[in-house]
Length: 467
Image 1 (cartoon, rainbow, N blue to C red):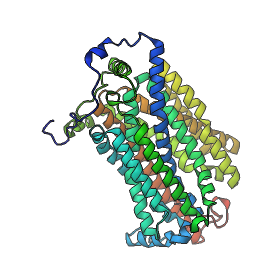
Image 2 (cartoon, helix red, strand yellow):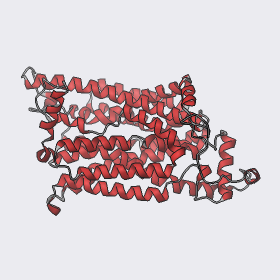
Image 3 (cartoon, rainbow, N blue to C red):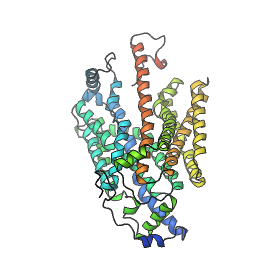
Image 4 (cartoon, rainbow, N blue to C red):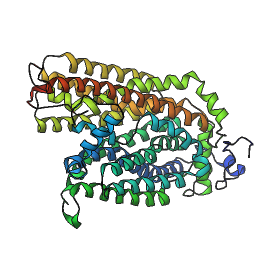
């Protein structure tokens, strides 16, 4: 092993197939053999990663469902967090409102992405199965613990633990998927993961509502059952992960020697990095000086704006159009799933044509058109149509942009850094816009509470924005 303390190149893995076997395999010798092998790879990799990704993206929504099911009444979170914010010197002029609940959200933001780099650096050393299993079990234990907390301080600690344990998931998943597939196969797999996430996020509130109906069972409130059941499911997922998540191609145990040699050789012929290179602090510093990695990150940053609009602002936009609560929720769900067919078609075309740049430009123009229509058109129906265009461009662009960056990066160490930069910059946008939105909402809430508005917020008497 290198004398450098973070040189991870000499980790222990399962033996790589002998060179003579690799050389003996012809990539195009048997199309049926190739299809069977890659289908088996898909079945072993994508389902378990999709479930992990779905769990990690739907969990943050549970806090709002638990709040609606009586969490604040039991733990006095609002008053407790209000005291905390005053102690920290924030929100001194605001009345105690439920908007302080944003502090309890797990910190899936820029600090999480910073923690992804160390996780990617030790991924080869620790092992995919060992790292992901440990993180998911710890994450599930923290979620389960939320069902038994006695006060808001304990709840805050468990939420912080959730953020720590869940931080590496996205980076590890992208890193692992990109290591198994050719450059023109990558986007279809990313699109499949994105679709599962979209569907999971859409149905998460329904599951939480059903669990809240267990109120009183076992002497526990309904909001506790939300955390307990989903925590148990997460622990079960951790156990399944130990048995089913694969490692990298050169260390997998589910393919035979001939299949493994075939996978490694086709990746080497495509980009020459089937086997890992050393990931060191010095090497990471070299990659960080590559301006193209930052260019891919800026593209991801700009593209994530449309996704941010749909995730954070869509209910407010639809309410402003005059729709009631039921109409807003139904229309928001329709918008959320509308981009799925286009994302599938685009992923197929981009991989088949081995071209992505033009698609990214077209999607950006579509999202921009949607933003213009939604912001300034006088007719509500046209503005609503604009939200479909915003989501269409955003949902389809995300896997396209990730694949665009991954396709043009060679070596495991550089890909780890590139995925970190892309996610980091896109999350910085979320942090910035969320902060600006809170400032804006706080201003109008204060004016409403002081009676300085000519008409109520969003046309609803007593309405206050959630921060």
